[in-house]
Image (cartoon, rainbow, N blue to C red; front, top):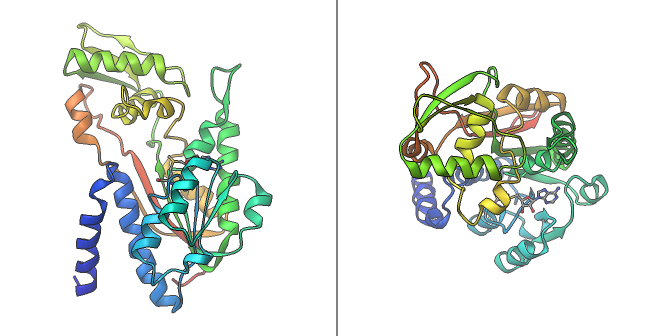
Length: 307
Ligand SMILES: C[S@@+](CC[C@H](N)C(=O)[O-])C[C@H]1O[C@@H](n2cnc3c(N)ncnc32)[C@H](O)[C@@H]1O
């Protein structure tokens, strides 16, 4: 490890202690490494754009840490929540904070070009916005179409050497209808599951009780939704988390979308950071089944690019 690498390792270790979500920490670290590499390669300050920037935990932290490597005034964040943007403005007053819908082609078209475009925990909200009241769940084909449209708008903002960073939920490969049997470790975990079944809106969750009160069978599709949401149930964040499906594409579908947009993936990883918390709640009793990969992280650039 070089001196500079060990400096940044130490910097992020201390800087990110207040960010509870471990997956997010991993995304910030990887984006930081990209900024260090790309700024050296391009030899000029980088313009960053985050779509669905929220309170600026990602882009604000990156701009603050890498102020000398980024063109803060030419960097921007887009979100439709005015309150969140107010926090961004306090965090990084010099950048552009745009209130609006990042799936709106006119808004995105007017933003200019960027060297790093960040889509961090944002596209699953686009997918989840296709909830259909008549169906009582998300309209999956429509949701997927909207995700791809938003992704192509993000790609359209990339400079010729630009890189797109995506971090979000991932649907495991395989048959989503495959049954899986689980056993809850406590009455508390079993009750929490009931709260999930009643409160989760994106899809109707079904399950069968097994021989004892603590064991059930459900589909892979429903299991992954339960287990990845379990850490939010009964917490303040559940109010918004219960409205969103974190999963929408498998890794293969992400890869296919990136290829259709003429992009090449330079880095991709599916991983889980919460399995210890999951194991505390349930045990999988079906032979050969395991806890799923929760997040996907990828960096992509225009096909034929050399960064
Ligand atoms: C889960 S938060 C992630 C925030 C930030 N990227 C982070 O990781 O800290 C998703 C954000 O995307 C915003 N968002 C979702 N869909 C949007 C849309 N179509 N246009 C603008 N903002 C959107 C929400 O308001 C929210 O702030």
